[in-house]
Image (spheres, rainbow, N blue to C red):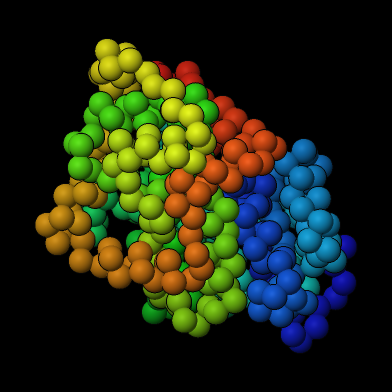
Length: 350
C-alpha cells in the first residue's frame, strides 16, 4: 500500500493500466527524471489486480525501482459506482492530481456505446474530484468537421471529445491526445493482412499516420510533467505518415526481409465482405482529403505540438527495435492484442 501523501505528491490515475497505452504511460510516469522522481504516484486501474497483465505492469514498476510509487487498484468501467469508489479512495490519499484515460478498443464490428458512456463518466468524475490534468487518449479524427461521421470506434471517441470540451467552462483542465494508426497493428500475420488491404483499398498517394504505443505513453508522461503548457489543447500523434507501399518498404529495411503479403484477389474479397475494413479505408481517405484541401486547418499545428513533447519513432525504427528484441516482438505482434484477431480482420465479426 502506498503511504500517506505529502504536500509535494501528485496522484495520477491511469485508466487502462494493463493495456498498451496505459502500460506505456505508467512506465513513462515512473521513469526517474520526468518531473521530480518522487513526485508522481501512479495508480493503475484494472478489472483484475491479480491477473497476469496486472502482475506484468507491477513488475515493470519494480524494474524501474519505483514500486513504492505505484499501486494497482481494481474497478470495472461498466460499473460506475465501482469507479467512483476508486476516485474516492485515491482522493482520500491526498487528492487526484491527474487522470490518464485509454479505453480499450471494443473490437471490429462491436457496438461502441459502452466506450462512449465510460469516457463521459470518467470526464464527469474528473470534474467532480477537481482533477488538475485530465488526459484523454482518443484517435486521429478523419475531419475537423464533427458532422463528418467516422467509423465505430472513432465515432465514440468523437462524442467523448465533445463532452470533454463542453466541461471547459465548468473548470475541467483537459488535454486530448489523438494517436494515429498503431504500429503494433502492422506486425505479424494481422499486419500483413492489414497492409495488403491498404495496398488494395487506398489510393497510391494516401498516407496512414502511424504511431507506436510506447510513444503514446511517453507523450502522456511529458504532458503531465508540463501540463500547464497543454491545457485545453489537442495533440496529434502522427510520427510517420506513410503510404501503404512505403510501409512495405520501411518494413523490409527495418527487418531485413520482405513483408508477407496477401494475394490481391483475396484482399478484394475481404474488402467486399468486411464493412469495418471499408470503414477504416473511408476514414483514412477522408483524413487525406481534408488535409489536402485545407478542411482540417488545425491538423499540422496539432501534430507539431504532439511531436514537440518527445522524439517519436518512425515505423522503420520501430520494426528494427522489434527485431532486436524478440521478447518485445512477441508481445507487440501477438494476434489480437488490440482485440483484432485474424478471424475478425477477415470477416469483421466478433
